[in-house]
Structures are given as C-alpha cells and as structure tokens.
Length: 62
Image (cartoon, rainbow, N blue to C red; front, top):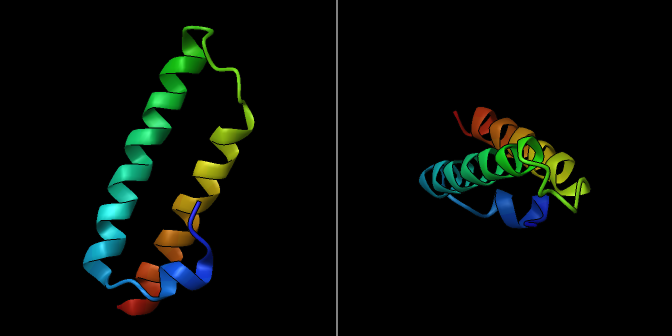
C-alpha cells in the first residue's frame, strides 16, 4: 500500500498505471470472493480506498 505522500510524488502517468494495477487487483479479489477463496476480506476495502485516493490525486493534478 502506497501512502498518500508517496502517491503525491508520482506523475499523472504513474498514477494512471498504479490505478490500472489496483483495478486488476480489485477484480482478482472480487473473483476470489465469488468463488469462496478470499481469506483476507480486509484487502477489498484497502484496495477500494486506495483507488479512491489515486482518483482524488488525479483530479488535483488536472
């Protein structure tokens, strides 16, 4: 998990790449939940919040 301070130091392109990674991770977690394989349920919340954090920073950079 990247801190907000670390995320602020990234460029818009780096944030977009990080956002894509997070969306893939969120999809993977959703599939694990659907098949009953998800053991760390708190990861879904962490990823969702980090996506929101990245989207906020992208909005600030525009």
